[in-house]
Length: 602
Image 1 (cartoon, helix red, strand yellow):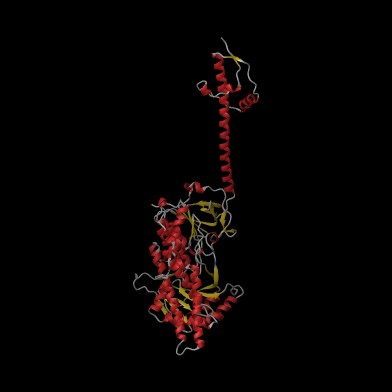
Image 2 (cartoon, rainbow, N blue to C red):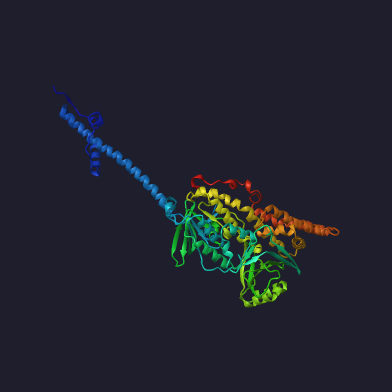
């Protein structure tokens, strides 16, 4: 007996697993099949009544299976398209981000929360492919700091790439006197032979001259090896020897090029962009970049708060065929308006540096400078050097250079460090610049030694924050002494400052601890901020006490009070700029106790 039952639409699209085992055949879904399926779904006309038989059941199940397969492909296609859309959106955003990335650069940046940064280099994905690094470290600049650091890291097994603007021998009128403390750092770095065979001269201390009086201050070298002393030389010869020593290592490469910008990706420095000697624009990548391109750095504004102060300028001369009153001693003349320096730079040459306050100098071209040197400076030069000084002026070989001071105020940026005069400067009166730079390199070497690599820029930068704290005792002592001595040694119409200058000369002339203590600070042999404060105010108290003898008067008492206030006004602003806590209590700084990140340590 046959039963007749109309087939409904719901029965056609019933799930196949309720009616029949799933088909194993493969179907290719196309746009045509999708549209035909939709067409069938929209025309929901019930089919003709069918007889329920085994044949009809099989046909019904097969038709249901076909429709279900089509619907499954529709759903799958929808989700695959959605996933593809998400992936394309992410990639598009990344491309736009890279396209708009900026290069940190040379002087055209805009302020952004303390970082004066120019356009980032676009389109680099170095952060995601560290294997493409050209070296472990890129060093910008191959002066004293750059060449010494290159050799030091190369000796530690790091692959180092150095990019220097000019690899010819530099000609400078500063950077020619290395204090004994700096020479000890040179020995510690294995670079002491760089002062040999360049006709360098041993320096054993300083001689002070004021109003016809003189005092000889010797370095406290009694407990040190006989070879330890200060060294003076031609800066260019010394730098070339250090470059040669660095490039002698197989894993250190020096090349000539002008770095125009730092390459930044997602807030981290990945390398540098530079112009080669032939004018070609190139890029170099490394996990760590060290900027030490000198006092005229075009990169510092993005890496530190550069508050450069120019208190004076040096006028440089070379005296020939003459002898210093005290051989192998640097000579400081407390002249009017500011000090004059003499020191040997070879066996037959003496460097003369005349300090002129301010930034406006007499013109060299029209002869005003020569007139100034002969009329104002020459009468104050020791008679042993007078004729050679006049001859040097007449030769016309006169050079000038601004004296810059800048406290160290880093802006933390992952993947980069800044060193040398690019980072921290002080008045060159005391010749402490190279000592500070070499001391910094020793500190940095010891910090980097336990690190296997520098790829994790965030962790490495966090760890290296301790560098800026650990360097403070040496650097801040030399910086503060240089700034304070320059202000004391300059002539002043203020009677209190005149007394301070006179007291300083007489205090140093007393000998014993009154001379060995300050000269130990100046030489870098005993860089103690506490001793610096004690000796500085000992000079002020000494001057105050002299004013009260033989009988104190209200006028002399008032001058003494102003002397103490003036001394405070000289040294305390310098200490504030250096950082009181970092200078006197570095162990209280959290960064002082930083440990190497475990995942990048050896």
